[in-house]
Image (cartoon, rainbow, N blue to C red; front, side, top):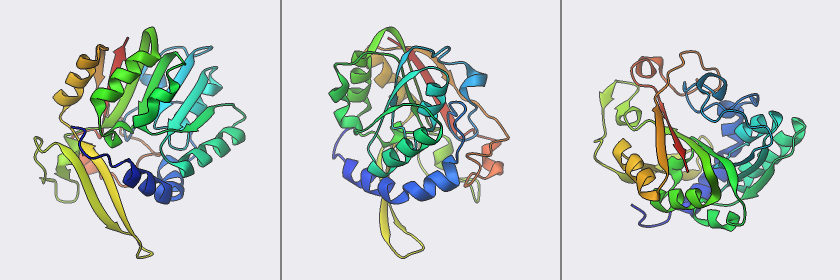
Length: 251
């Protein structure tokens, strides 16, 4: 499901949306890894365990919240993102929080630039729905992980994306996988294109297995009180289908 690479569109959207997203969605919460909308955090789920002294890579780091939280706990963190604006924000956030994280502007397709490094833990929070080729990415993640290293990533739950939160009706087919490119006209009348990839759960699982990674757990959490991700998520739908799904793998 690679097809055309929409990385340029994705980069442009995130460069444009970064300041709004960080202010309205991500906030300043940098005390723990929050896995996604109403999806609980690492303190509760305990998916990666102790990070002190561990080499950690975050893929699609946005404003750096997760990596900064892990650095506070003693992790040695590298974090990459496609967006220069997101990376700039992440660097500022790290300075404000008094930690050191190696932030780098690298898209999914160029993750092999890190091949000389080996990591104990690789994480990705709500970012892989913007990856055009999961098969290739997972194979590269496997190469970057140390033996028995842990890979944990979260995504928007495919079931949640099928339903219109305003009328609670199914508007998409679960089987309609692939790239989705949506035209947006923002309040300032500027035109932007939001691009992401829909995948079935089985597609994600099969990509993991094809890479040689071992799938240990799939978590579908639901935490009702969530101040960070609450904007834009209607409780009527959230209460029925949690917006976040998490996968834990091991090398």
